[in-house]
View: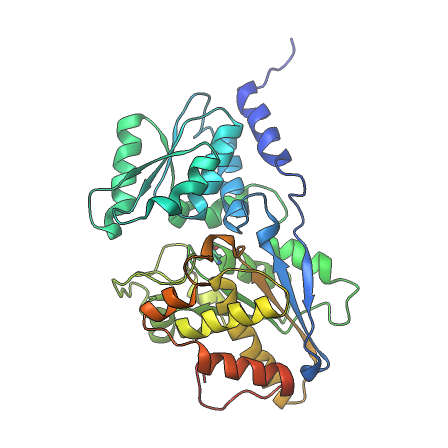
Length: 363
Ligand SMILES: *Cc1c(COP(=O)(O)O)cnc(C)c1O
């Protein structure tokens, strides 16, 4: 007797998910040219190169693979997610790839324009009726009614990345750095949304015994910096972040403060300034990449001051396209009371001289 796959559909589905995208792995590692800090090499891992333009593609791919492998997602099962953001866009893409219906439950105030990405990938959306903070619970209830699989990125993303058996972002970075002048970086700098990426990187550093330190950059209104600084791991601010993808009103279960060496609070105006500066330097990226860059420059300036050499790796978390009418539009920025000009001056001066002010921004 020959063995049969217990679920041939799932085996084929996993194959399809893994094969998605023309250039799905590894994403490029780009070098940022900053002659003022000679001997300090800054790299940007370009996660906007994923088919949906965001690092969330990687997390969602792992979540689909893991849900299929564990039998949680089977033929004909609809998929539900609780966000209007990049998780929903990637979720819609993988659901369509597998012939499954996809619904994003989105916060009540989400503008229709922001939902185009979900529709382009063949997904549907419905507005939540409760306050935005309740959208997770509401989506879970919708999934229950539909008999759907709930794509719970805040709870499951980190575990799925660890379990799915694909090379992680950290595996890729260390592989890509081998052969570079400083193959073991001094710092890796990430933002935290679900917390999965920083946790995956932190675990990799420990498991491989690397001396590399892990810094998380955190925007205004987020619970992560105060939670890390105070050691209070159920800290909440109740306020939404203005930097899409990062910063949370509460500490999410995937955030692992014990793996993080430093959390750098970054003013939102500084994130916008750094995103704009990166654009003039020829790299298009979203505001969370600006946050990453601000923290990275700050650490590079410290190293420069101390006469140290080495490398720092950070991420391009998503592309600039979704932000042309928001963070890249000066009137949108002004209407939110944000003034990037003084921060732009800081980053321009840093790029010219390697100098960072002693007490400004992330000080
Ligand atoms: C989600 C996201 C992050 C943070 O990643 P997590 O693994 O969810 O913590 C950073 N940048 C962007 C652009 C994101 O969308």
